[in-house]
Amino acid sequence: MFSEKLIKSSQWKKNFYEKYTWIIFLLMWILPLIDIRFGILGLISMTMAVILSLFSKGKPHCAYFCPRGGGLQKLLRRFSLGLKTPEFLNNKVVRYGFTIFLTIKVVLGIISAENIYDLGSAMYFGFVATSILAITMGLLIKPRVYCGQLCHAGNIAGLINTIKKQGDVASR
Image (cartoon, rainbow, N blue to C red; front, side, top):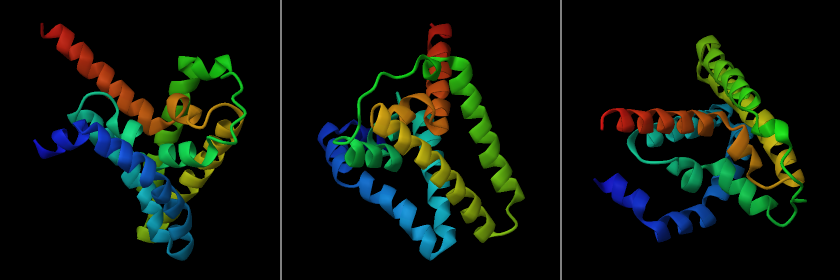
């Protein structure tokens, strides 16, 4: 399958990740200021994380294609203080509680949107709020600590992979 070969190409992934994802991250901040409908880019990114995890191993979107992850890595790597990750961020209740909260917010934003402008606005507000949290955490701890601990799209992708692995074990 073409997409599976593309995902497996290490050099291509590394080049794409290092060269382009941070630009997409900046565009996700700027374009909705010009036209709020571009706020939907955040929803597309979240959806891609889930779709790619359904059809491949691991979390390739998080590792190679996520605009926020690439942006945080590129923009914060020189400024991060590198403090120890607080224990509460490793707590599954905190992690999955935050995932449930953000997922509910996204679903409610989709349901309550009366038009494309409302949807773009809701998704952009969520993107900005979580990005501010991610940037703050990245400056204090590590650039992508938000990605590994609190990103709801990444956590959902991880749960999908856990379920797939359990299914593989059960079928043996």
